Length: 152
Image (cartoon, rainbow, N blue to C red; front, side, top):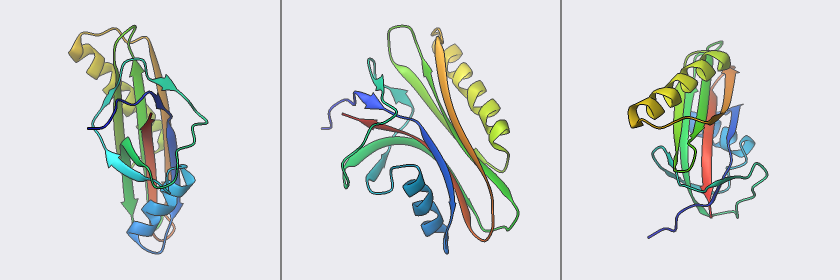
């Protein structure tokens, strides 16, 4: 059983690669989480988790991460990924992730509405939101990636 994470940061990056997998890997490297093992998680930020933007995670670690990504091999196509964390007053938060064929600004709008809906559905008061988004114009093979890594 894994312990409950106590720290997190928000990141987004894009990159090109010679294959879809290397484009994804290169985006992870630019997002500062390319040398860890991502454990994809759903969208709840544990109570009391502290935003730590300069967090350094040891290489090879198993890292619970909520993320959205998109890879395209259509030259000239615009792709984007975004994540958002919504904070409540004194309980857990909600993380949303999004990716699509759109601009970063469109992704920001979409992801913000997703967090607002998640809080409304839970009948929780949204007191703050952090959003990170990135867009990428594909050269050969590109990836847009956004994530919320959680750590202990």
